[in-house]
Length: 147
Length: 147
Length: 215
Image 1 (cartoon, rainbow over the protein chains, first blue to last red):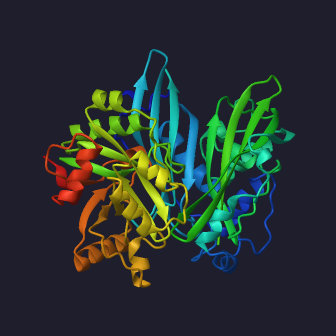
Image 2: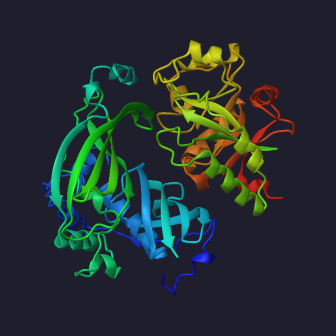
């Protein structure tokens, strides 16, 4: 276990520092390429603002829900680097836009421990900057840290 | 429009619920693992440093599964659709060269009403099984149809 | 006493919290000084008659009541004191059910219906009232919903004030850390769903946010 993280001190109610992201079109294209070599046409909701608007997403071209989920996983893993994310269950409640600042973060909702491991249950979310009540992605995760 | 939600009967072949749809084999390459980690902005060397210690990022199963089958469900009100969420279970580390069998099945179909009117949900689940029979992970994906 | 009148456990499709997770979290919140006495599980489009949470309720010293949140033609409706008679009269999974019929049938069978998040687009009462749909017998709405966006809360406040509705409060929690963020303050003495319906009829309650309960 890494010496830099005091897992004993992380308890119910504690929040991750969180990570900020602001994806642009090139980064989204990079993700689409990593998505099993998927190549979207130039006018998909992920690559074209007008198309996103036409499909009812408004605002800007959107990022794939899977990318938002991956950022949440990153936020959890950076906070608990020795842990394995055993379960990550995320509901996509609203579109997540490109060229928009989002924060991914997490909060411990339960912690159990035995001789071999610490088990954290955590709530996770992706929050759009400037809108308190709007978290386009929300979910729950289980992270296990071996002792 | 809301009345049309009642017509859920007959919009898909219910005999396919819970039954295997398709089974494919994939090989997880080091290149795919690195491309995914890079695309989501990951910096932890265990996900980004090529070599024998490299493991796949916990979100990667969401992008390894798209070639597998899906049961078509035609909601009468549907004009557009989106990814409604993913539930990932990671049971074992995935390493470069792992040959995985991906088994897919339809697990749920239901409707409800949301801010923008009727919504139809279709949930498919994919299991990822290594050559030695170990299930390394599972992903349930929920797709939402809207007017 | 303070009761969260609107919450969803994993029995609802879009919730990821178990009842025990909620109760553990409530005890952690109590240690911070917040007052929380109970919750009502209002699962989407169903009534869970089978589950028995009495042992968990005793273990964590939290009242756990069961209700429903139903999709209706004119928005979502929270139902308290659900009876077998009501579940037989109204198909709870019918997302096009008539709102007036539900409210009337609930009253007839000893239950109590309350329109949820009235300021929310598509699934709240205000939008339908603006289109001319009237609810002459309505007395109570969910005025405080901790999941409301600011503009949705403004609409809920406005309709409650203009039409003289009493207001309950709830969290609309779908995840553990959301539970009890909104609640209803009642006079002490509610022990079961029947008492809860009685208290709703008496009208001596109001919605609060958790921050207002600090001792």
